[in-house]
Image 1 (cartoon, rainbow over the protein chains, first blue to last red):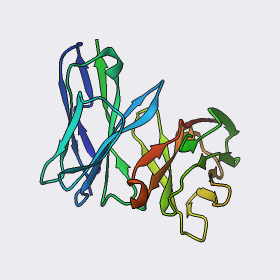
Image 2: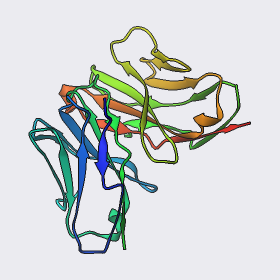
Image 3: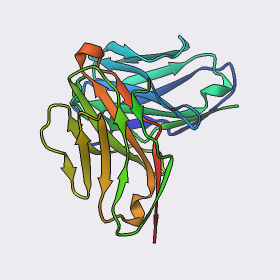
Image 4: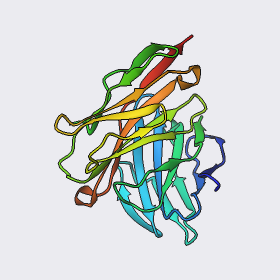
Length: 114
Length: 116
């Protein structure tokens, strides 16, 4: 079974631009979560989608948005990029949005904002 | 209050020795799951072990075991017979149940270095 696939692996953007990251979950998984990881803040939860609906949202500005498609693939968009958005963005999938469900992570997209 | 606390920023262990990585958590939800993940320098988060709040026995997965002390809200990871490949960041995480929104929380991590 293929794991969680994130594309692209690396991105370089400049301030003010926007970026879209993609995540394909494990086959059969309907929940997809996004996280931002930085050396200073650690791993921070962005949002979770389940069956195309946003279930949970972390404490991030509206510049961060996401969506999930009917095949459970998810995209995350960041508009008006700031230098502080430079981070490793991790996507995780699980069968459902439940406490006992293990989240499996992709390799991440490393975004650098110049 | 922090949902997940890992008080050891860095740990060293001799190869083939056992090591315990500490984790305490905070939740009022009776239903929750506790997880440990390993993150090598490549960046990918690798699932290691899971413990449910209602599980009576401590979870074990190969060389990994979770020392679950519910009353103390502690979920320490024990790695037995450490190997050089165990050098990585280790994150403790908790997912709360539906009462509190099914949110996932991560600790700040412990950097483990295995010394030959």
